Image (tube, rainbow, N blue to C red; front, side):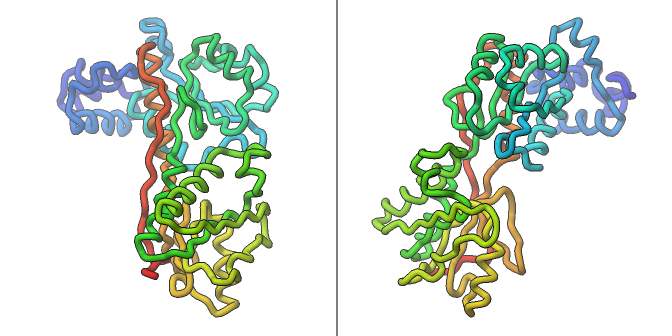
Length: 340
């Protein structure tokens, strides 16, 4: 395992420069140019450098480890590959280590849960992926313990980072409006109407993306057309395809029903985008059956990276900002839309 002096010799920099760049606190990292930081971090990875948590803990009280906390209950923790990529990038840049605690729901109801994680997992802070109905006991335990913690992908006013799902629905709809479409369908095959009205709890993104669609349509003076199937597996309700007059475009808040929609259209002699322009909200570029979809990309990697950076900042500075942060979405153009 390489030492700081070996890395310094490898890149031709002083010991202090390399030590400050690799320090988990990051207090003096910005004294150096991005290129210098990159050279040091790449050399450290190449030479197999690992910081000493024990030595650092004795000197600074910082152990150099954070814990990603998730719940085993279905639909409660959403951690796609993009989230892990964002977290890994942030901890690597700061020289931290990452532990993952995948816990039963009962653990989150235990008031000793937070201090126990800090003690048993040697954790400086918690990165929490609990996206639906966060237990009050968990919030109280975090507040009481004063353990640094940041939530991902939840609609909280404090200590959270999430995608701009309202903006995603709005951006997708505005893209179609600019192309001249007026009969624009909003098709959420997996959601019940009760989820939209709040009668049944569901992740906030379902409501926010729909509200973004509604806002864009109303600002353009257009009549919303929405369908909610409430079925998370085939056969999904695609009756909106046969509506009269037929929609010329559709906003799909997720990619679950794409294959069924394409199959139904093929069987009835219709084509994308000739007969229907399609914009999908998805985590990344989407290629399916020869189509490169127009996608509003949900920035889960950026959310995870920003949440992790905020947590690491709070670990070394108790006054660091922990207000909520909303990360904007971006439009990836494909070949599934055309002018009306």
